[in-house]
Every structure is written in C-alpha cells, then in structure tokens.
Length: 346
Length: 289
Image 1: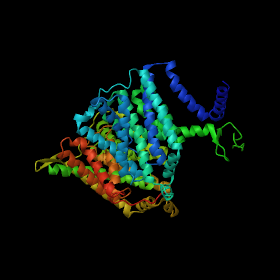
Image 2: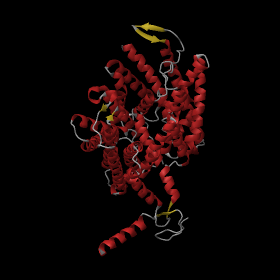
Image 3: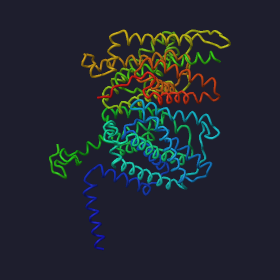
Image 4: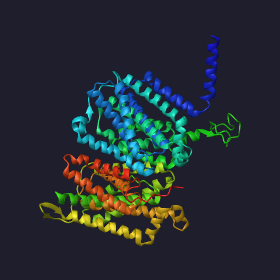
C-alpha cells in the first residue's frame, strides 16, 4: 500500500509539474478527455459522424505535415496516398473479403508503396518543381481509374464495402482512438532523432549531407511514413463511407489537405490536427447557408492568414506562452520569471 | 483526323503557352506560385459572357473590355491578400488557393453552375479535306501567336522587360541597381493576370464557360511550366505545344482517350523530368539567400 501511495503521489507531482504548468499541455489533455468522454454526454449520430470524419482527416492532415512540413518536400498530391489507401482497402475488402482490421493497414502499406514509387523519381526535384510534379500523380491515377471501369467502377467508384464496425459508437471509438494514437506516434517521430534530421533537411539539405547523413534515405523514409498514415486514413474513410470513389483523388482533395495543414501551422503536427478540428466542423456548420459555404470558408482562410501567416495554432500558442530567453523553456504568458531558471521574462 | 489533331494541338498548345508564360513570369519575379492564375482566366470568360449576353455588347468589344476589369481585380487581390504575407511562402500558397476557390464560388453564386456559351467572333467555317475548321479557331490561334510575340517584345525589347527579367534573375542585385522590387512585382502581376485574362477571352468562344473550367488548364499549365523549365519563356512555349499535341493525340487516337488525356500529358512531363530534372530549357535558379 505504501509503495502504491508513493507512486501515486509521485505521479501527481509529475502531472502537476509537467502538465498543469503549461496551458498548451492542459489544452491537449482536455482535447483527449473531451474526445474520449463525449459519447457519455451525447450520442447524437450526426455529431458522431462529423467527429469521425474529422478524426480521419486529422490523420491525413498530420501525415502531410510529417512529410511536407518537416522535411520541406512540398507535396501537392497527397490525395494520391489517400486514394490508394481507400481503393486498396475497398478492393481487398470486396474481392478478397478481408475484414476492415486487415484491409485498412494493407491500404496503408499500398500507400507506402505508392510513396516509394513517386518518392524515388521526385527526390531529384526540389521546391516548387517537386510541388508541381507531385500534383500530377493523383491525376494520372484518376485517369487510370476511369480507363479501367471494370476493376475500379470508373466514375461510380467501388461501393458496398463492409462497415468499419457494427455501430456508430464503435466506429467513433475506433477512429478517435486511431487518430489519437497515430498522432501521438507521428509527434513522437518528429521529436525523435529522425525528426531532427527531417527538420534539418528542410533547413539546409547540403549541410545535412555534409554531416554524413544520407538525406535521400531519410526523404524516402518521410515519403513512406507519410504515405502509410495517409493510406490508413484513406482506408478508414472508405470503410466508413462504404465507398471508394474518384473524388478521393481529386485536385481539390490535395489542396484541402494543404489548406488544413498550413492554416493550422506547419511543422508542428498538432497544428494540422487542430486546424481540421476547427475547419471541418465549421464547414459543416456553414451548411445552413449552402450556397455561401465554400465562399465563407475561403474568406475565413484568407483573412486569418493576413494576421497569422505562420498558422493559427502557433500564433495562439505564442500568445498564451512565452519562451525563457535564457534556458529556452516555455512558460505561461502571465509569469514574470521563468519557472526553471528564474530569469526575468519580457 | 490528322488535321483535327493538328488544329486541336495548336490551339491547346497556344492556350497553355499563354497561361504558362504568365504563371512563370510571376513565379520568377515574386516567387509566388499563383494557383489562382487560371481562375483569372475563368473570370475573363465570364466577363465576356456578361458583356455579350447581359449588356448586349459586340463580342469583339466585350473581349477587349473583359481584360481590364480582370487585371484590376487581379491587382487589387494581390495588394490585399498576397502582398502583406509575401515573406511566408506557404501562406501565399494557400492564400492563392483560397482566392481561386472564392472566385469560383462567387461565379457560382452569380451565374450558377450552368454550362454557358459565348458566340463566335467570326461566323462561318471552311471544309478542308473533310474536316470542319471554324474561322474562330484560326482567329484564336492567330491572336494567341500575336500576343506571344508581344510578350516576347515586352520582355526583351523594353526597359520594363529588362527590369522584370533582372528581378527574376536576382532580386537583391536588381534592387541594388535601382529597380523598385515591389513595383516590378506589381507590374509583373498585371502582365501575368492580363495574359490569363486574354487567354480566357480568346478561348471563351471555343470552350464551355462554367465555374470549374479553371481546374484542367491549371494542371496542364503547371505541367507545362515544369516540363519547359521554370522561368524559361522558350521552355514554356515548347512545353506547351508538346503537351497540347500529346493531349490532342490521346483524345483522337485512343479509345476512352478523353479520360486519359491528363494522365498521358502528365506522364510525359514526369518522364522528361526523370531525364532532365530542371526541365527542357530550365535555367537553374540560384538558391534563395
């Protein structure tokens, strides 16, 4: 009993000292808790549906950030990974009768393959060239999809898939748990050794290569990782909507991902997720004025960018927290001295 | 058949060349990847529709009149939304995407999503070897060539052109040599949007005017720019005709070709890039400092 009490007290101290001191960490904690305990309060199927789709797209936006935000390899064709994941999961489910728990990860693996196939030629390109070239791949795939309607269903897509699970509530918990889990994994990747190399590749690729690091291998790794997560989100989407169609490959799909990620703030992982959780329900909310919906959406983005060109979430974070000039540890904005080294904060 | 391919290849090629040159001009000078570029092209087509159908203007007159409001809209939106955030490349990128979406939605609101048509400037056609060639097609092609020549003259024969080219080459040094960076960017934006508007104006009688007409040219234009080499006028010109003809060949020769036209053109671009990563006539840009 004594030892248990000791650990509990220690846990509480760590919790108080590490989580409660920073508003951003409290917000993340609240975000997790709200998502997990929401069904206790309400089980409105429409609300759950929106949150399921939001979670699926949050994975997609975060995976774009992992590739393009961190390594700076602008990918304008992220719909490719999403579409490959969706179509693979759909075809495997329909023809090979693999249940969702098998077809979704296999869709992710197919997207990894797609990532390698487009990654290898694209690694010779840089910056805008890369961005414009990657834009081409989902369109090429869409042409193929239309050209072989026997396999892919052409314009109508592949429909009649197995449900993700029996009920809306289980669907909700599967997608939300996956979203939280995968986002944590992505965030862990970006703070790891590999993540630092990704950062460095964006800042100065030549310098990284000079340091004896095979940047090509790391860029391919970024392509595959990002493809895997995007493919999983594509598979989830296909199974939740029970259809994989050419709409998943459209240019507007790729653009939407870019909008979410940059709006939320690149190279943060939490930024794109937050942006999807703000923008996607907002778009649903604007449903009350169907004809003005996309216009309002575009205007909100334009106006937000004028004031927060680095993205919404980093801007908010810098408002509520400041960095200690001496030890670089973050503090609540209301403090006048650093919580660790007691240096005066400006 | 062969004549069909040649005609449609020439027209597509000229349209892509005009769009791609405008796009690569503003990219070269201001480093803006202007996704909204073809949205201006759509805007011009709608202006003509409005001029001929709602105001009852003469088609030729409304074509010329369409270009000016579009340039003004382009410059105003540049000043309002792009210029303040020019330092943040990523933000500029989605600002232009959002701009294009906003224009598409506004057109949807005003004109609804209906497919509209604009009357031909010159009526009549001539049969050549059993292929119907409308005079409008020839006119479009001739006008496109004329404007391409004018752009070339502007860039290589005038002082403004010199300023644009030197800013594209090295912004800092051009600034040191007394060229007002932001003014050159503004002029280039005007020229670039003007080119897009002109393209929209000449193609409107041959195309179906609808709010989503900017998507396909956008993709092809980007492919042309990458294929020809970013910032190279000659590259854009050659690349545009290569892709224009590729598209025409696929449409006429392969069954189900209409679905594959984008795929084949883009595959050509990727194959060329694999062999020459800087594009056909690419001028390797200096790394940004």
